[in-house]
Amino acid sequence: MATDLFAIYVDVIEMGKRLILDDWIFPRGARQEQLRRYDLRAVKVGDAVSQTWRDVSERHAAREVLARSEEHFRLLAENSTDVVVHDVSGTIKWVSPSVRGALGWEASDRIGRRFEDFTHPEDSSLADDLSKRMRAGENCVTTLRLRHAAGDYHWVEVHAGPYTGEGTQPAGIVASFRVVDREVEAHERLTAAEEQYRLLAQNSTDVVGHARNGRILWISPSVTRTLGGAPDDWIGMDVAEIIHRTTCPRISRDSRQGARGSSVSCVLASRRAAAISTGSRRTPGRL
Image 1 (tube, rainbow, N blue to C red):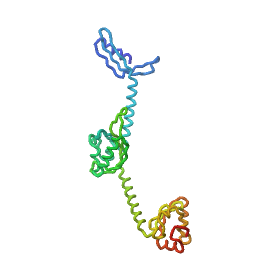
Image 2: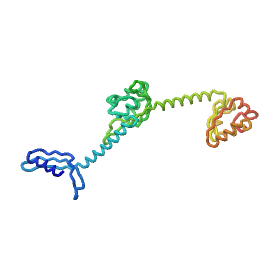
Image 3: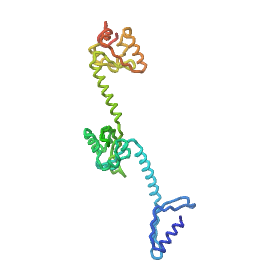
């Protein structure tokens, strides 16, 4: 190493070459066990050599840390199923390769385009609101539809917020999203089922109730017509006080099982309710 450097200095003196070496490794310490890096500059001046050595070991270490960080980020971006997008001034500057698996696009298809260019027309107001809130410094989460390369649309859940570069200077917006078609479909089925149940419970002549730990949590409005009292009057009542044990032994038994921690739902037909209320008050109370 030192021999090579000596040969270079010989060329500087004998041939007048300028010496420019960056990140030159040179040992330091009594045993030369410590390796440092230098930027070397030398030029012939008359019969002498003018030279400078600048220690750049910290710069080299910082570059290695940055390279490892970039490698970790590259592995994350290329292998994650989530899609990461960097937007600057409303234009996509970078998007992770995972966009191909999610929506069929090559990353280059997105560069230079606007996020709104791929948004479903009915969700454009959501995308506009999302952009305004992020530029105001908010971190946002929303669900909307994005266009697949094949032309159809998919539901995605977007997490986005402002991105700060070196120091505290704003450097655009970073967003990540994942396809949630199955989740949206499941939610819509659940909502539809709940609506059907609500319509059934509110319009049926039967009384529908839900109890947990032996106490009524919910009861359908038809209880007013069948047994008397507003639904709120029945909430929190002990099931054992409402159902006649000799007339409805099975329901009584089930309610006691529910008292051990499981949930119990029961339906009382109007004729059974009438039988239960025979000889008793038509408002909540012990039968």
